[in-house]
Length: 301
Image (tube, rainbow, N blue to C red; front, side, top):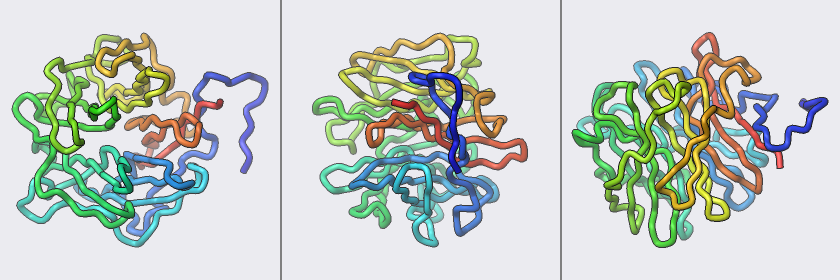
């Protein structure tokens, strides 16, 4: 298929890919109820994706896919690359990928895990030499507590000798009043929660009182954060910073569900990246039938 936009210069405007969705449950050999939360890197000429497959009762596992162009994807293997922990472990109910980094030829997958739908949400770490075979740390690298009952880690960036982790958090499992905060580390393993949290709160009408899912691109010493509203889950906006700590929000979203090719009722989990010299956002869309799929939003050069 060839998709063409006629009659206008779209430079500087985000465009929903005409062939969306790019990954559905039909791409997965286990045929889950849906797929979401794609995390992508561009590595040695290959686009690599780790994504979440969702099954009955919200149980999940993490799968791996590859692409030559970031659009056409093939799930690799017939089994997930990471699964929930054994019964009694801190992640024995569900796991969701947070971010994947490649550092000194080693892959690091940070992932969210919990013991039940109402349980605290902490962050685990798994290591791999090939991105497919992973070994988990036995304990979380960020542990939930009374102030951070739900740590929804979604991105990590390197600033000089520091790792900066960005996450959404709340004092309960409620969707209301979600905030964005950060943590700091010298090695990417031992983390200190930033004392100045929250770095962003919901203050605008479109945000609906709750924001989440920050992801960051750093370019020319500017931090560009894409984030979403949580309750309505229908829009993405951007905030910028010169230091990675103090962000200034745009007043209105740059993309919402009415702009989608498939007319989704919900859009969520935007993963903002500059891959192979192109800005992309991989996001989850929900159809009227309730099926979740992974989609692509592009910013032409």
